Image 1 (cartoon, rainbow, N blue to C red):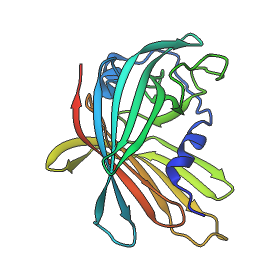
Image 2 (tube, one colour; image 1 turned 90 degrees about the vertical axis):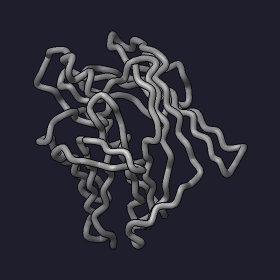
Image 3 (cartoon, rainbow, N blue to C red; image 1 turned 135 degrees about the vertical axis):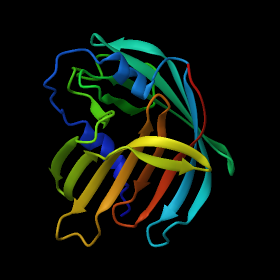
Image 4 (cartoon, rainbow, N blue to C red; image 1 turned 180 degrees about the horizontal axis):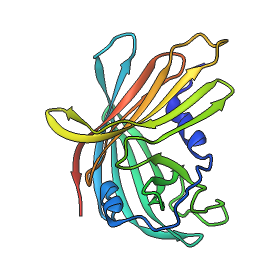
Length: 227
């Protein structure tokens, strides 16, 4: 059975990571992620296989992302984000997904992803400062969290700032990595997912890989329009 780590990320990130801070996010932390209403990003999805290093094939899938507005849920403000996924190889392929993002008191990008409805309600979620999923810890290089699950140990950590070139365009990103080490009874290597954010630009690249097959995809930023 193929299982994609990215599918596990939402479930694991939904575990409450408790904050020691009660202050609001600083302006610099808000600017790092830049989830202001009206911002837009476009990503292309490339498929790859760990057994064939360095070979990426465009899947035809394009993810057009827009921050629609700001909504309040349980007293906390979230940026409502719309993903419109299309496929150049299939005219009938058109998926729309919503997410709700905010910067918490620690400067971490948190929220709710994978919603089919544009109207999330407070009744659907038990939302507090520390209850929503963490998607990136921000401009830090010492974040680490470990979680043991039935299929293995999940390690989440931030890496030092690094340079990244995508289709000839240079970026300076802070990587956030999700590493899965399978339990001994599962025959499989360590798998990693990586999300790379550039200050003020936003998400630049996402790498997701299946736990057992080694097949995965990479979403690459190809254009953006920011406020």
